[in-house]
Amino acid sequence: MELANIKNVYFIGIGGIGMSALARYFKFIGKNVAGYDKTPTHLTDELVAEGINIHFDDNTGLIENAFLDKEHTLVVVTPAVPKQHTEWNYFTDNGFVVKKRAEVLGIITKGTFSFAVAGTHGKTTTSSRLGHILYQSGVDDQAFLVGV
Image (cartoon, rainbow, N blue to C red):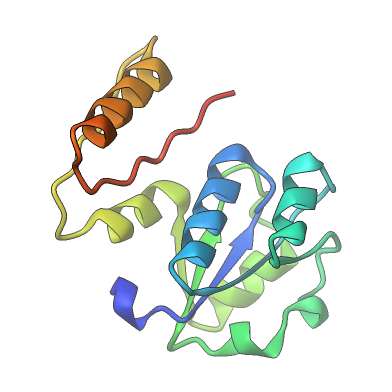
């Protein structure tokens, strides 16, 4: 799925630090964003305040009609969601494009020059410093940083 063809992005498990960052990114670039999470948190409260519709019941009837357009909807799921999740199964059973968070990072960065930081310790610190250096150097960049 190409980023340009995506109109709607639906998140199953939107309340995690990495998923909420992606939701904000897609909202920022003008996509229609909504999602589900098991429990309300300060992150889900912030997303709702930013105009992202979130519900907390695993119920396909709560999914807005716009997100039922399988040609233009990307569904993003976190591994924290159990495989028997009703909404996840609805989307997979009905032929929607369903991707894990890591795969979505690939969609976002496709065709761009990217730095990726991996390792056991210091990834967030190193990534933050790299993003800051690029920003201070006047490079038109975007940084996805997730730390807990």
